[in-house]
Length: 103
Image (cartoon, rainbow, N blue to C red; front, side, top):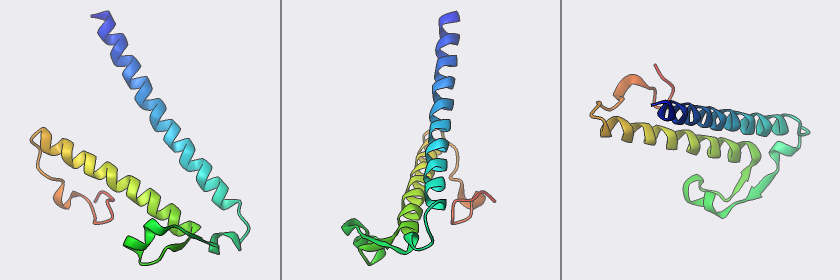
């Protein structure tokens, strides 16, 4: 039984490390963006993939970061919905705003 406890602890530590690692990455991105001169965020990059859902392939850095973070959070929400369904829980329904923020 002790080995199962060790495995559980290791799993929890790994999960916490992954969460902290993600927070550090977000913080690093935001610190980088915060340190840019005022003219830099207005610069545009051409990313053809964005034309499909944003109507243009020329997007600014803030648009890119917002789209990537938004996609990432929506992916998590989709995973949670699948888990809720798999364990027989009802859909979250009105428990969250359309933005994904809990009510």
